Image 1 (cartoon, rainbow, N blue to C red):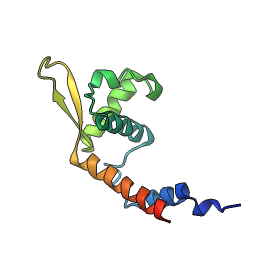
Image 2 (cartoon, rainbow, N blue to C red):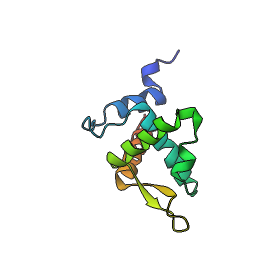
Image 3 (cartoon, one colour):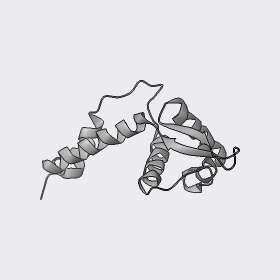
Image 4 (cartoon, rainbow, N blue to C red):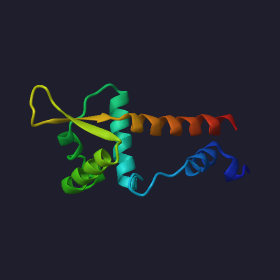
Length: 116
């Protein structure tokens, strides 16, 4: 039986855990991480994403909870909200360079884990 600590997923999780942690003011909680992943995957599919679409995602929590977490992601520098050119009341969600760097670090951890 293969030891769990030597499996690729264990290596990946260990590598992620060893990444330098951000200060408490910019560290992501579990829900913020899940929302950021959702935004990342939507962006990777080259789809636009509105704040209104995100706050309707019941699997992540109430509208108030999601709105608060989106505000946190903006404050922490992972996303920015831009006015929709067609309707200024709607806000488009975009990843920032900080979010791109976050996923680049995760990608490096994954590549490293797969090489072991």
